[in-house]
Each structure stands twice: as C-alpha cells, then as structure tokens.
Length: 99
Image: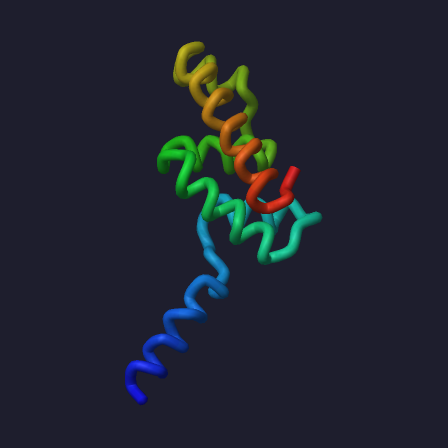
C-alpha cells in the first residue's frame, strides 16, 4: 500500500507547475497559459544559466535591450546572450509550442 501511494505521488510531480523567473515573466506578458509558462521555465532551467535567465526575463519584459546589455556588459556578452537566448527560443518553441 505504501509503495502504491509513493508511486501515485511520484507520478503527480511532473504535473506540478514550475515557478521561476521565466515562468513569472511569461505569465506577466500574457498570451500563454500556466502549462506553457511552466514548460518555458523548464527549458530555461536547462538552457540558460541563472544570470542569463535574469537577462532573458528583463529582455522578455522589455526592461532591457541587447544594446543596453552590450553597453553594460560588453559586446561579447551581448552576442553570447543572443546566441543562448536564440537556442532557448528554439527549444521552447519545440517543447512548449511557445513563440
């Protein structure tokens, strides 16, 4: 009986919505449901480091631009961010259906 309850609880874990900076920015931006935003958070956790997630959130929320990133952190960092963010976008579109 305990094993069945444990397995039932384990099977429910993937259904729990993930929350994080990307999921929150996704929800705030609107247009996507909670499942899509949780999926985008999962992809962000897999593809973007913490600092890049913060930059991506600022970029998605339109609080920063690539030009501002280049000015504050250098052109090389801006170019790396664009490459990482593009990979995130491609993977989130494939996995989550998000644009």
